[in-house]
Length: 331
Image (cartoon, rainbow, N blue to C red; front, side):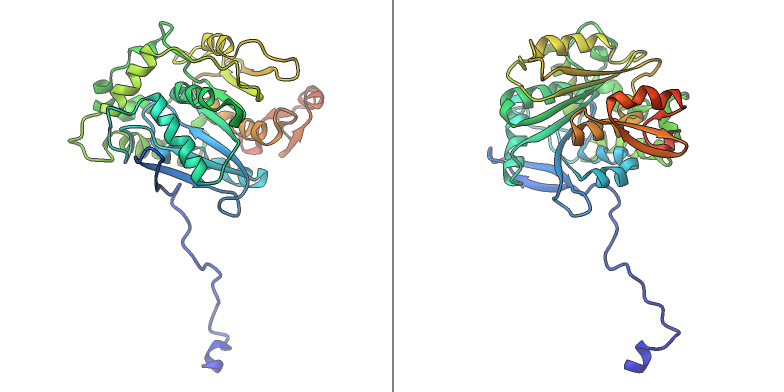
């Protein structure tokens, strides 16, 4: 046997385990007694790093976070751990008519307690906004920072409030479709992954299961005002494209009112991107990660194919030299 192992014909392979095919869905029993589905994606060491609580857009499952993992290496470099809890009636989570925003928030904090996570940075995109607001309002002392990327606030006469669950369920892929000029099409495999998430969000429990989760979400969007977030003393960041027609920039004003007066050392940082639409959460996901890690003290820029985390005062000079925002692949 020893002679066989030493034979030059044998080539040793280093892989000793399977690589993940995306976020792994786990289950836990919350303090309410409800069974919840969640993901816990750590850095290089599972469970390590800065905890980020992710809330995806309307109708998405916890696996939707996989759409953000085109920057997984960067996330690992920053040492950020991502946790997300699936919402009522979406993906693999059966619909429970008794579970609304408050009940969901209770279950999320219960999952975080079970993971020994005290403070967390909350990141909400699009339709995740109202859920993030209730989470932050219920435990403002546990919010490390709040990040709102084109996040829906409440019904203010926008097209987003007029979507019907049956309409989306009839063609979930169309609900997810990005315009041809969107930057997301530069991400390898993104379009195919979007189709998978669209179908999973509506049909993961079978085609015969009615889309009650979607119907409830749209009802909440249309009829639930934002709670007061005045007690949230943590840093707040907002990211918006000026040409967003699904969740227009005027939603930012509603978030500002909910946040109330802010201390001078806790301003609301607004990152507006001229000419961009309802895809800033992807195009500027790198900056969201930087803000989670550095709390506004650094911006991601690329110059001559190299990405730097620059202090805010350095960015104008770098842009004058031709630097672009974000990671090198965007350049």
